[in-house]
Image (cartoon, rainbow, N blue to C red; front, side, top):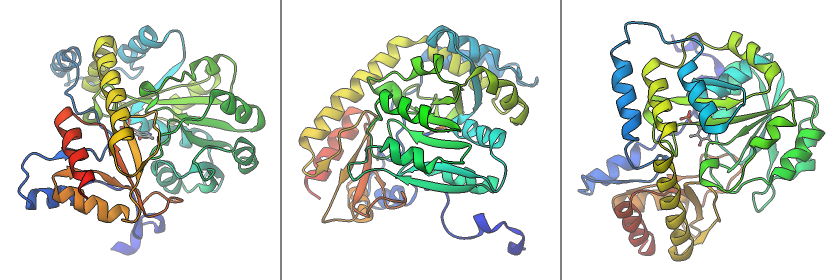
Amino acid sequence: MRRLVRACFSGTGGYSYAKKADNVAREHGFDRVARLASNENPRPPSPAALEAAAIALREVNRYPDERTSVLVEALRRYHGDYRFVTGSGMDGVIETVIRTVVEPGETMVVSTPTFSFYGIAAAAHGARVVNAPRREDFSVDPAGFIDACRGAKLAFLCSPNNPTGNSIPPEDVETILEGMDGLLFLDNAYVDFADIDYRPLMRRYENLVLGRTMSKIFALAGLRVGYAFVPEWLEPFYQKAATPFALNSVSMAAAAGALADTERVRETRDHVREWRRRFLEEVPFRVYPSDANFVMIDVDPHTGDEAVARLAAKGVLVRSCTSFPGLGNHYIRVCIGEDWENIRFLEAIKNI
Ligand SMILES: *Cc1c(COP(=O)(O)O)cnc(C)c1O
């Protein structure tokens, strides 16, 4: 029956999960492994989020509010008066935006190397992907990006970028917004760890969407909550294209609780910034400066896969960047964890 599977899913590829290294760490006798492969928040969610989720759980016999008002109101309190759409993770928002504007067979632009899901979602939709390669230092060339965008309805840019960690200056985003005809989806999954604010651009451009997630600094990866700042014209069409009730009521309540706990967000940010600095100073390989909760490291003369295996044998899970198209095979991505995890990682990488 495999013949029934669409060509875009029948080969190898797809999203990479960090499972194999987990087994290696366990085989080496570690029952507590340092999980630095998936860019999560190592701390549990805010108590306010857990309480709100527990209360919402009592009413799951009912369908969730389709306007996700609890979350949208919490977002307005947190960010101010903008238009928001929500989804099941930012991944869900990405899929819905693609569905809203791109016809199957049409072109979508992705700035590479970057997060793999844009390409996976495009393939699932039957869209064609054009890659706009970043420069050698992984910065974005606005003129090159605009060229790649000719005739495309939708383009993806990630800032801070996964896996390279660098951000695109807001001025360059403006240049791109003015030069392109289509819609720009600026993925801001890690912007809470940076010192950059792209939100003011929402007031001035009609062709910008800012994607956000509750999975990273807000520590709710398991609940799958994403949202986006959208221009006013897009919102009703997004709602039409969206899967009904994609965001469940428990996740929504937890997200609203987490957004209210700004003290916890600040603590997480401070913790990440402190360790990011130490990784940059102490890792005996080239570490790329990062605005996110992870750093990319060039482990040459090792390959990324070798480094992952060796670190796993020392009880540390990190991500090999080999699967990121457009990147060499000698990079790893390491997320900032709790103190003991970071200390174990630094020890391990110094003796690799
Ligand atoms: C983690 C991540 C997301 C999506 O996260 P969700 O868990 O689906 O909200 C989106 N973009 C990038 C670049 C990410 O790293």
